[in-house]
Length: 102
Image (cartoon, rainbow, N blue to C red):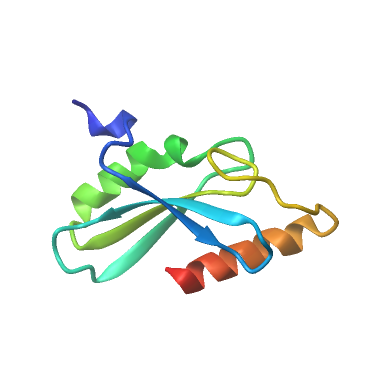
């Protein structure tokens, strides 16, 4: 099976944000001790699946990496923000909280 186009090498995780939304991310943890974390963010019309091939290639080149693919709120398996008054600020807070969690 070609892992470039599947999610079977990733595990799904949900993290509750202080704003009430849930952050959805997919993780690959190497069997080696991770020396760094690589976070992959998709564009405004995608989800984590669009980056799985790139992330898989990265994992092959960096077997000591902790790989995280994020579904931004409103995309993939993630619910949208409750309020869209300050969307840029909401995405900034979302990413800050998620990175702190990771």
